[in-house]
Amino acid sequence: MKAQIKVITARFRLPPSLLARWSSHLLLGALAISVWGCAGTPRGQDDGGMSIDFARVPEVTTQAPKGVVAAAHPLAVAAGTKVLKANGTAMDAAVAVAATLGLVEPQSSGLGGGGFLLYYDAQNGKLSAYDGREVAPAKARADQFLMANGQPMPFRSAARSGRAIGVPGLVAMLAKAHARHGALDWSLLFEDPIRLAENGFLITPRLEALIKRAPELADHPTSKAYFFDKNGQPKTSGTRLINTEYADTLYALKAMGPPAFYRGRVAEDIVAASLKAKLGSVMSETDMAQYKAHQRRPVCEPYRQWILCVPPPPSGGIFLLELMGILEHTDIDTRGPQDPQAWVLFAEASRLMNADRNAYHADPAFADVPQDILLSNRFLKKRARAIGPRAAETVPPAAIKTRTTPPKDKDTGTTHFVIVDRYGNVASLTASVEYLFGSTVMAAGMMLNNQLTDFSFVPDQDGVPVPNRLEPSKRPRSSMSPVVVFDRRGNFVSALGSPGGSAIPIYVAKALVAHLDWGLDLKTAFDLHNVIGRGNTVAIETDTMRRDVFEGLKRYGFDLKAVTFEESGLHGITARDGSLVGAADKRREGTVGYVTAAPSGR
Image (tube, rainbow, N blue to C red):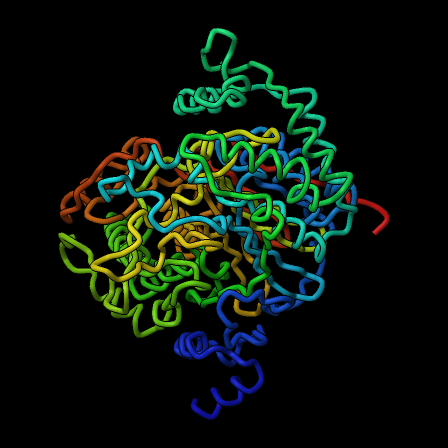
C-alpha cells in the first residue's frame, strides 16, 4: 500500500489529508479524479486559474432536460431558464437569477450583498470556487460594535446600522466568474430583472410577513417609501412593487459592465446611504473601487463512495465537511429518517461541529484556520467517539489553538440556487445580505448588507486577539456552504445548498445524509424535518417530526426547543438515470424550471 500511495502522490499530487482519507476508504485503485496544485496557497492570495480537475462529462442524454434551474422565487427561475434557452451557460443564467432575486427576494439577497459560488466546467472537467464575500472598510475598527461601557452592542442595534455594512462583493464575483465561464455577452443578462423592476412584481404572502418582521425599514426614507404605504403601514400581498432605481442600476451594469457598480453613481449612492444611516459607516468610494472578488481552490473530501466539494474559508464549507466526516465514523448510513438514533447521531455531531466552528472559523488571510486538522481522519474519528450514550451537557471545542468569539444567532437573509445547463456545467451559488433585509438601508434600488456583524463583536479574549475579530479589509466568516457532489470516478452527482444562518451546514448535511446515505430523492430529503444541534440545545421542527423520533431525542437527554423562525431553503439538482432532477425546499417559495427543447446554434 505504501508503494501505491507514493505512485498516486506523484501522479495526482494529492494533499496529505485527502490522500490519507481516500486510502483509508480503499478507493485509490478506482479513483479517476486528479487534483492539481493543491499544496496550499499563500494566505490571502487569489488562486488565479487553480481549480480541481474531474472527469469530463458528456452532454446529458437526448431524453433529459436541456437545462435546470432551482431557485427561491419563480420569477428568478423564469429569468434563468430564459437565458438557458438563448444558448447561455449555467454561469450566464446565474447572473440573471442573482439579479432577479435581488429584486423579488430583497429580504434574502441582492447586489448589495455577497456570496460564494462553485462552478463546474464540464468541457474541461474543472471545478472552481469564487469568493464574493463582503469586506470591512479600510477605516473599520475592531471595537466598533462595543458600547461605551465596553460591552457588545445588542445584535439588532448593530445590524440595523451603517457600521454593519460591508463593501458588497456579489457583482464582482459574478463578473469574475462570467468572464471565464459565460457564453453570452454580459449586457444580455439583465433583460428580465430590468423589465420586472420597471413594470413591477407582486408582493407574495411570505414577503408581506417578512416586511412586518422588519419595522426598522421604516427608519430609512427610501426603504419606507418602497415597503410601506402612504399611511405608514407595511404593503400587503398582491401589491405591485416598482423599483425604477434598481432598473437604473441594472441599466448601468448592462451598458458599462461591472465597473459601473464600483465606481460612479452606484458606488456614490451606496457610500452616501451608508454614511447617512444610524451609526454611520466609514466606507469610502475608494473602498468600493478597490474591492476584489477571488477565484479560490475548492476543498474536496471523500464521504463514503462520494466526493464532497465546497469553497474554502471564509465560507462555512469546511465545517460542513467536518460534520459529514464525523457522521462517516458512525452507523447513520445503516439507519434511516424514522430511526430516532439516526437523529441522535446527527444532533450530537452537529453540536461538535458547531463548537469547533465557533472556535476556529475566520478569514484565513488574517488568521490561521486549522483546516487540515479539522478534516483529518484521526481528528474526525476522535470527534465521533465523543458521541456517548447520553447527551453531553456541554460541548467544548477541540483543543487546537486560539479560539474566536461567535456572533449571536439571528434571523437570516440568504438564498441559494443551482443551475445545470445542457453541456453539464453546474453553478451552485449561495448569496446573502446577512440579516432579514440586511441593514434595512436601501441605495441604488437595493438592500445593503449588514455582514460586518458576522465578525466577533468582542475583539479580544483575555488580552488575546480572536481570529474572527473585525479588521480593515478583512472578510467576516460565513456559514454559506454551497456544495457539489461527485462520484469517485469524478462524475457529477448533485449540487445543493441552503440559507439559514449558522444552521446552513446542518441543513445541507441533513439533505446529504438523507439523499446519499438513505437513498431519498432530493425533494424528500429537503422536506425532512430539521434537527439543529448547537451549544446546549437542539432545535427541532415539531410540526413535521414523528412522535417516536421526538421521544427518542427526548430520552437521549437533549434540551429540545421548537424552531421558531430560522428555516432552511434548500435548492438543488441531481443527476439520476441519465437525466437531471431539481428540487426546492417546501419551506420557502422556491421552484424548479426545466428547459426541455435543445437550443440551437451552439
